[in-house]
Structures are given as structure tokens and as C-alpha cells.
Length: 106
Image (tube, rainbow, N blue to C red; front, side, top):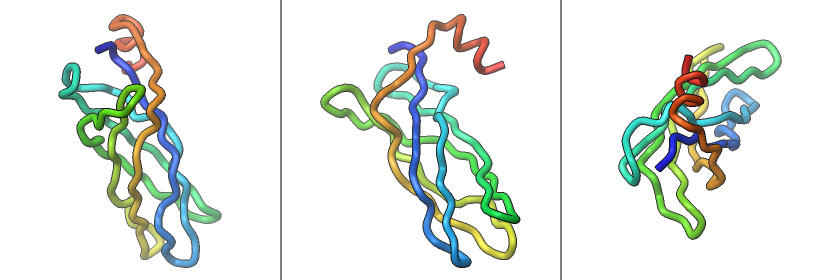
């Protein structure tokens, strides 16, 4: 399996009267073939505050046209509240050669 990334996009649970949308790529693949996962991290903001998040996807879940990964966790606590998030990556992947992947990770 080539080094690849997965796009993700989902909303967090409502807290303190608002929610956040997570949008990004789960990259930095570790493992081989059907035994691999991805690291992800990011920042999301709403009006006057920001939450950071990071995590590791679950193992691949086979689909008709490839695979997806489960993601979940909590945004960093800020302004006396935090948000839970959970969802799945998109099936579509972006493939990279090992040389390109080394450049992207740096």
C-alpha cells in the first residue's frame, strides 16, 4: 500500500451554546497494508476562542472502493468547556511516493 492521507470533515457536539467543525487531513501514515493508522492534529476556532485537537485514527475499515478510518476524541478544554468529536475519514485518499511523503512530513 502506498503512503497516503485521508480527508475528514465533521461537526463536534454542541457545548456552551455552539459547536465546531473539524476539517483536515489525517496524514503521517504508520504501519503497512491493512495494518496501518494515521496521526492527525489541528486547531478550530469560534468567535473568541480556539480549541486544539490531535489523535490517532483507528485501523482501516474496508469499503467497496478502498477503506476508511474511525476518528474520535475531545477538543482541548478552553473557556471552561470542551467538545467531543467523532466520525470517519473519507474513503478517497491522496497517494504519495516515499520521497514525496518524506517532504510532506518535514
